[in-house]
Length: 174
Image (cartoon, rainbow, N blue to C red; front, side, top):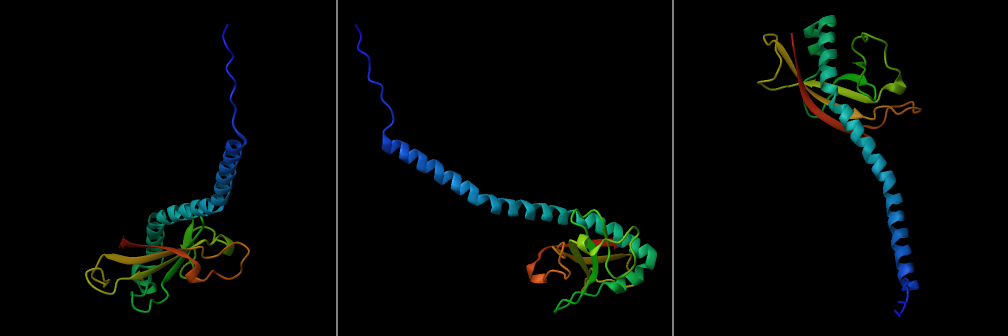
């Protein structure tokens, strides 16, 4: 006859340690969820901002054709210190619709203030080789896109220090 082996279970201490580890890991995961959601939103906004150069080039070309290339050039001040207010454009959160804030009316319907998520500011280069003069057939601009420019439900634009930004250069031809 064979002897039955005694069935061995987990001790009370082992069970308490396992439950403690599980509870700690669940607590850490739940604590990380808000920061992960915030990082996801910031990544989505940065990705949308990186789509702005193409839409901006199209809109600046439209503004140059509508108002004149030299007039558009006059709207974008040269870069200097301190940085002057640049040619301002606004875009929605998806960066799909974009238009000048103050210069010329948009080709389509104007964005409502609550839809103006990105503020795009443009400045001309002050020094050669990218400085604009009447002999050149291109306009090179330094561009800063900042967000959130306006948040829904808030009347005033957000403070510049509270915004994220993305800086790039762009050029349009006559």
